[in-house]
Length: 75
Image (cartoon, rainbow, N blue to C red):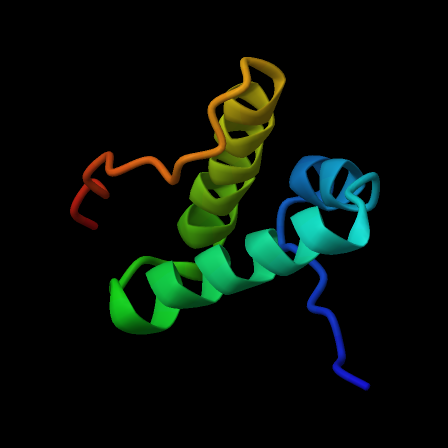
């Protein structure tokens, strides 16, 4: 069983607590990628990962599940 991290920002933590299992996995992966591979500070990586989840929800609700190819901003 994996251990989930708790976001630094309490507002992001409260939002992340509402995610389903798949969204939480996406959030965790994106935050980790941005922090460890992208060089972002953890709090920034978490905020950007939250935005990724929101973008994914928007694409799903509009019927477009294709992954976004939007560039990641530099740290």
